[in-house]
Amino acid sequence: MNFRGPRGDDFELNVTPLIDVVLVLLIFYMTTTTFVSESKMDLTLPQASKEVPSDPPDKIDIAIDREGNVFVDKRALLNTQLATIRRALTEAHRGGGEPVVIISADAAASYQSVIDVMDAARQAGLYKITFPTRVRTDQ
Image 1 (cartoon, rainbow, N blue to C red):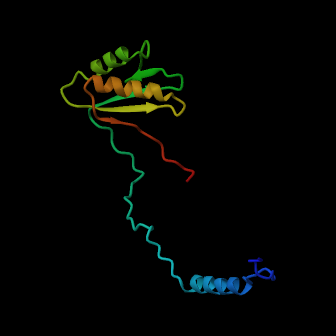
Image 2 (tube, rainbow, N blue to C red):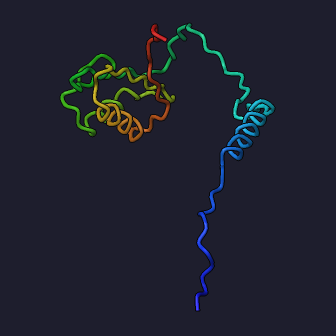
Image 3 (cartoon, rainbow, N blue to C red):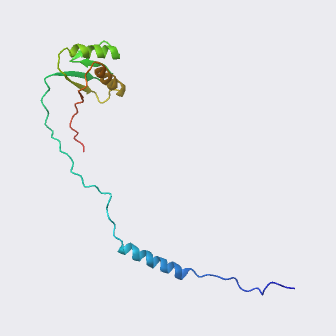
């Protein structure tokens, strides 16, 4: 007994018309779709002036050069240990007010030396710290 049917040609599905329909639908959606820019944020940025503010009356100037040497009120410190910096800041702070610590560091100064000065200022009870910069000319 032969249960198999007669062998015929393999069935082939022509996908060319299907691709044509998909491309027409794609072009239709592309031309009718509107793109909404929801990620765009409407911000009004604050403005800053280039005016140099006057020096605060109570201030402590700290300078750090590119080698890491620390200067407190234009006096060089013997070393850059945290205790030495803290002692110099405590002596400079003798007044009763809360002075502003102005840390002027060279652009090539190490990050660690700046952090050491900030840490010494915090330990000396000085919390108002600022960093003067120059205005960038190349935008």
